[in-house]
Image 1 (cartoon, one colour):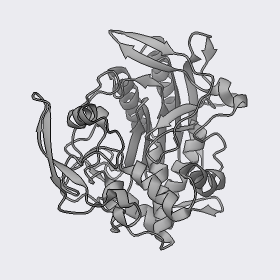
Image 2 (cartoon, rainbow, N blue to C red):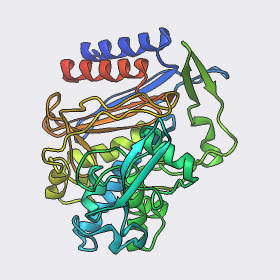
Image 3 (spheres, rainbow, N blue to C red):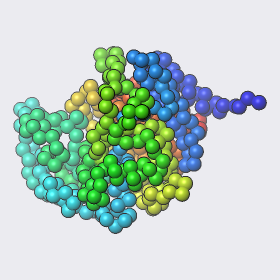
Amino acid sequence: MAIMVPPSTIVLSSFLSDAVSHGDVPGVVVLVTTPDRVIYHEAFGKMNVAQGVEMRKDAIFRIASMTKALTSAGVMMLVEEGRLGLDDEVGKYLPAFRDKQVISRLDLAAGTYETRPARHAITIRQLLTHTSGIGYSWSDPGLAMIEKLTGKTSTAELPLVHEPGEKWTYGAGPRVLGEVIEKIAGLGIEVFLKTRIFQPLGMPDTGYSIAAAKRERVVTQHQHKDGGITEIPNPETIAGPPRGDGGLLSTAADYSRFVQMMLNRGQLGSVRLLKPETVREMGVNHTGEVKVRLQPSSKPDFSNPFPLGAGDDVWGLGFQVATMQRPGSMSWAGIHNTFFRIDSKEELGIIILMQTLPFYNEAALRVLQGVETRVYEGSL
């Protein structure tokens, strides 16, 4: 007897197959999960176009800023253990973040700026919610100018783009959180995440470096530019810098274990990482009236303005929290156009993995929005 495939699955697969055949993206892996089982997991296109290698469901992707959610979970584990407080001053753990300077005047045309001492100290909560004033130069033209003028690039040396708690600005706050974890736990962030999250959840293909035996599973990167797509071959050594805000590589199946843990309110099988009340707290509004702002780009080949939901959505403890579309769901992304959504209300998790630049290019957004629309309409 033939096994019937749900119509919604056929529709989603047809959409993704078309996206690849039309040249929107070279390859993509999509996974949809409930709290206890994966209900859709398929691969489309090529993982290495030059070599004609078909995309695999266990392909390894650079997930970049999807690292931030894992770091945030690690922080909340330390909060539960009483080793860290959400409203602790960051300078308590990292002296370099005491007495920070804030940009008080900026003239991009003239190439000049001034700073003043911050009136308030940065807190752990502000790092989790991107309200600390720590930015990224690739998405902040002012910081890009200051980096060029001063030659300074470290988060500790650069000034804040606004007073802590004043606005939402996407930035390297979770990188600082990774340093806080290292200080408290006495472990490198790579070891902490591996021993406290990856191994307990069963995420064997997630890490900051790739063993030689797994290299053939790593997807090549692609650059959209001037109406075309250029493939960037993988280097001999594939590794990301071990930081709290990025650098990880992972698979859809691995990341789904983390998503399922969050959908199960902190537990996966017999393993509990977080208390139910902690997971709930991570997904509620922690920025009050401060909304997510549309972020510009100082490097158009690297990123377009982002994110969707700007002007409406708020931020929880490590996640963008939707207020209009998919209200209450938690989400974020990685610079190479990898995306996830955790919807506890609908008991649904979605993971979409691509490897293209710039971030938020039109083709990638078509895939993201097309997948989510079909998943929610089809109730997979």
